Amino acid sequence: MIANMGGYVDTIMRSEIRERITQSVLANKAYQDMPPETRKKIAEDLILVEEKRLKLDTPVAIRSFNYLTNALRLELGRAQNMTSDNGSRTVRLILLERLPATLLLMGSSQLFLFFSSIYFALSLSRNYGSWLDRLVISLSPTSAAPSWFYGIFLILIFSAVLKLLPFGGMVDAPPPDTKFGYAMSVLKHLILPGASLVVSAFFISIYNWRTFFLIYSSEDYVEMAKAKGLPARDIERQYILRPTLPNIITNFALLLISLWTGAIVTETIFLWPGLGITLYRAVGLFDIPVIVGSTIIFAYLLAITVFLLDFVYALVDPRVKVGA
Image (cartoon, rainbow, N blue to C red; front, side, top):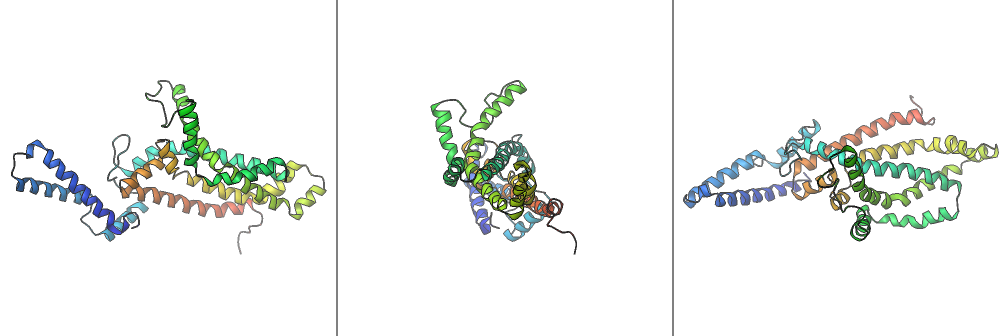
């Protein structure tokens, strides 16, 4: 209902259909010798056929219910205004074809960001108040800017001025013939969008984890372990990381499902052919099946993840008791 604006998008689509078919009939040489009334009748019939194909002749409430029922069964239907790389209009194929590109970009950048942030945060929690700790704190406000903001500057510096990296896309045109050359071309195109995603959240991510580890480092059992003379590595692994493991797992699980949505604006700026730019184009074209399909799959992933996390907590956290 929200994607359709309560039926307002249907009005826009009807107007576009009428304009497109009317122009097509007027431009068709086979119809130019016919009387105006006949051409108008042909245009009206074609408009009715197109509206029936898109099911615009049924009430918006019924179509919204059908969208929901089909989406719950992952029967996402056919796109209205978009096509996949192989010409298919099936929503499932459109999303699946763009998924590998998004997983490559988001997976490589977000996994690197996640593990590097935890590693540096642990190091800073051991050196509280050092110059490096103060530097990270002072740089954390730079994460207020979104990734596409840094992407624009990276393009200007490394593509326009230095001419070291490509402006956008996923591979050179024409693509290299060898697998190694193709992989190197993809890696070259991956550097700038991946760097923009990492830079935009790197310092705030370290700052958050560092604060989190500092809270657990001040617990009494940690001070007791230090007094016993346990090595710093053992204290981090057994007394700091172990209690924070549920939070780390939760963030990691939510990170994995967030890969599905991609980075809409960043992918658009770098012309990265992933799910983000697909969703952006679907919104611009009022392609409701693609929007609903992408959203419902994300909802499925979120529900499954939250359900499985309850079992994971019971396995990794000794404070969680199973049963009465």
